[in-house]
Image (cartoon, rainbow over all chains, first blue to last red; front, side, top):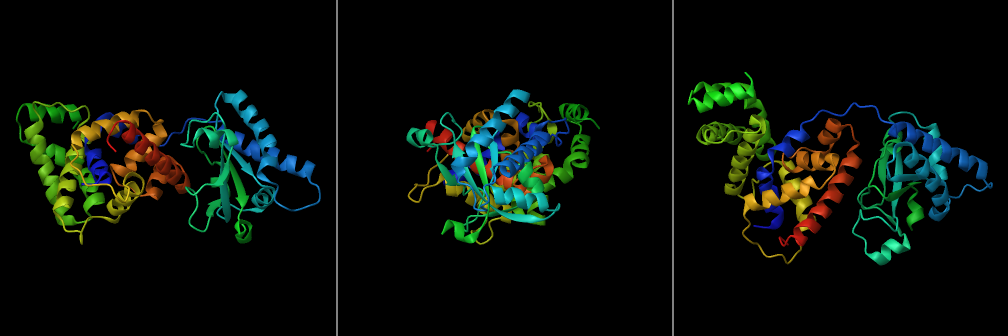
Length: 174
Length: 185
């Protein structure tokens, strides 16, 4: 038997308390997170507007870090969490503002693992380099995933990981 | 009837225990089996076997929660049925999909087939699951115990399907690291 089959079979023996927990209804407790996410987008859009230099090119990922880290500090100071961070590129921010509920947009997602993150299995050299790479967990072979406005704004990722959402354009990966 | 009342019937060896159990959890156990087998006749057999096995196990066992005690028994029978089937008919699409997901992460091309003690491995997985955040743990359990699809899990917990897929992907990778560290891989 392969280990994958054994794992699937062995799930029959996990603790009943774990099963019981998974039956819990969806949490309805009040959370600041959605509001913070909306606030984050708002601040980003303002920052983009104020810093516009007349070009419509997508800003390089590294240029987004400062803005987002400032937002991260705001969030952390409010609820003490170290949430995953979501950056939106300029074109995507503009598109989101015009989207209706239910509309889908093609997004390419990059992840940036911060130097102190233990969340992912990158080696030390990679961590120190703060790599940015397309996150294949979110995308098909063609490198994008379709998401609604609500999904983007409520996106939750791994703690300590920054996600950079780009408006997907086929030629940008070529 | 409350679970404690049903369990007391078992302890008194009152056969109404089975009727009450079937009435309360028959549909639930059938669903657990259905997600794995996708075959009405096999599922009904699994559920019947569950009642028989429960009668044998209680007493002396006194379940922490009857519902999940039954779910584990039903799931165990359903997995046994799967093992006896040919590769042509291996069970539900969700079973195949879940197996593929695990295989992609846990099994390298040259991995030899081995004998694993399912109970010990289950205990190891329980320990691993307890290291996760509740949301990650719940999503993993709904996928790999109940074999629910990503969109069903997303709806249950108010997440997007892409978020569920990300959680599952990362949890599988963590499981691989955990099993490697503990000598299972």
